[in-house]
Image (cartoon, rainbow, N blue to C red; front, top):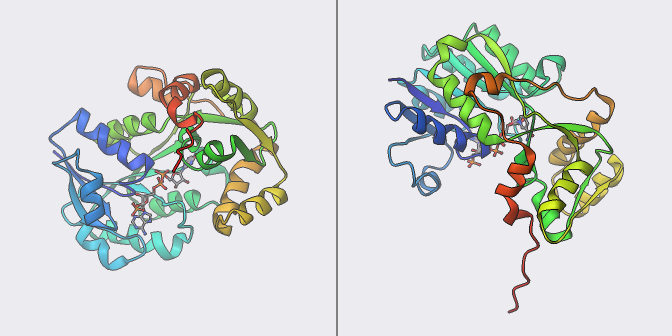
Length: 296
Ligand SMILES: NC(=O)c1ccc[n+]([C@@H]2O[C@H](COP(=O)([O-])OP(=O)(O)OC[C@H]3O[C@@H](n4cnc5c(N)ncnc54)[C@H](OP(=O)(O)O)[C@@H]3O)[C@@H](O)[C@H]2O)c1
């Protein structure tokens, strides 16, 4: 039995990791590191055995207590945190200080190629501290369609991005959760390697939009705009500047890059193919449908 701390537990990936950890081995002690225990109690009501501990990336005073008695950490970088030296250096030092030597970090596909992105800096930091590690490097989440992009889909029936014809590799977060759970369970067999988790399809937003339209009743549009126009649209809608910049980097840069590599690591690990986009869209169909207007 291992004691495993999950950070980012209430987020998209963290929740799936917890769900699959319980499915594969109910005997592990799983601890969710959360900012707000009361909110988390409600959020995790389906997981009565899950322990909760107060953990805040931005408050180093919470580190030691959260790490006490832990063997293995699942580390996730919350999207708004980019200052690696300020936030992650003290955290990794605390992990080491608490004699924890095993860490799985949710990185991103291609992290090794760009020294400026936070994921690359965090990977290097983990190696600098000499921790045994697994770097899980997923491609573009299918769930971006049902989280970041769903507002425009529901209200404007469109996806607006500066992506042109760029192709993205689409991965289902459930697949990331399943793979991470196995890697947490069998850490010694896989340690000190990076693993890319991808789906098998590289598709542009125009192609994805037509796949969605084949399945739903009220079609949506894909509108590619230049980065400046995107900035103006999103600023007018009240999106924070930091998030707008991340959205531009994530969606504009791929126009100038090679198509993403496709990895078969998930299939090797799990003995099944990753989710394809058509299956994901059918699963989430109700989210893409036009919402009925509710009269007062
Ligand atoms: N989107 C993509 O296509 C993609 C692809 C590859 C990699 N990634 C990487 O995946 C990561 C995001 O994963 P996700 O989508 O699961 O994130 P998410 O849904 O935004 O969840 C973020 C989690 O971090 C927690 N959190 C935020 N600030 C915190 C703090 N100060 N202290 C403690 N916990 C805090 C949140 O908890 P609360 O409930 O307290 O808010 C939440 O549980 C990022 O590093 C991103 O770069 C994303």
